[in-house]
Image (cartoon, rainbow over the protein chains, first blue to last red):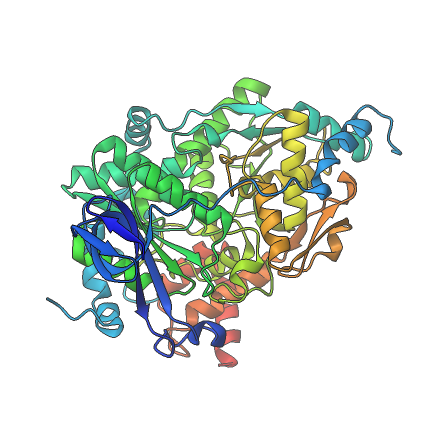
Length: 103
Length: 471
């Protein structure tokens, strides 16, 4: 079982509105799923297991409660794969600019 | 402890917003459909000189206006004889948080500090969050950003995930939510529980902060070319960018400069849909915000929206996601400027528009934005493919929002689609009449609707009668 220590950077989770209690104007596929929330901060408790309810102190200094879901969560964004559909555009445009295109 | 149920918090909205905006919006109401927009802007917002001073001390604005000589040369090769305006771009990525949103945030955060608020809160998944967090860091205020990030599978838009990271890098607490308009409920709760300032994108502070973008364009274009810009292309979503830029240009005496709003066409995708959420590559600058905010601006997190785009746009055009990715590549490869795709929406439109203007004319693209992991064509297209979107080279006319992203095969295929502004005005009027139904309109309402739609009062009266006859 993963365990976080006091002061560690962690992420908590809460269901804000359960499925079926969503705002009336949302489309069916949204109404059928809960409104969920994640916030990160520093663990307040001495120790806590992932999956248990904890308190965090957020970067704004707020104390927030929720289920501990991650310890030092990874930033998932990256540059992905170079895109074959884009890779040749620069060279194609330079050919046109230099007057060697079919213009 | 007050009741924090959804219904109870939504019911307390007027009181929460009043405390969090520090603006007595009721003072500008006329009792009917209309309100005194100009008086609100004059009394609530700051003067241009004051805004310049606020922005100067925060390192905001005075970004370079760059001439895109290679892209202009390319446009001229594609254009007819004598055609091909000079294309300039305002490099707003040079602002502290990497976008023009720093202008909006600077005034809001200054105002919050002046009025003793300890922190600021903003509901935004876009560059505005980073801008608020950055400005709040400078002025020593706390910041909380409420973002719509994930679908119900917990999959996040790469562009928004990058903005979560950026906000946290500037010290903001980020509340990440799944798709849905009930974000507003969470936002109200945060405002109520913290007593922080509502740094709304749609307050007079936010809009007046953009006016310097318009005045700088006018001044820099004059220095660079000896003339005022003939056209300025503005990426349009919530309407603030169009409104603030146009107001600034007007202040600088550019009455005859054409204001062209541009959005990415996302027709058919529902903005509150858990399914559609990750089937788009652009999270802003698209018609999913552009149309509703043009036809019904008072849908924001403040009672009266200071962004009134229909008052200012002379023309509204759309382009496709694939065309913007293509032009983003063009900007990097031909001009040596690697910038974020969403900010290149207006450049894409300008590339097509320039080809129909004279060679002596000037067209200005009024923004760029920073780029980074997630906020870049390669991760966004990697993500699109992973979510089942077809990505291929072809004719952009084959674009289908949510299904196929078509990267042009040739720059000559980049084209704008004009939105019929008369229809947008008609839909604006229908929405505006929603609250009064077949009731009689006061003369000040007619005057307001005329200003909103830029139609003669007599024409507004005629259209109102027609709409009411069909109710």
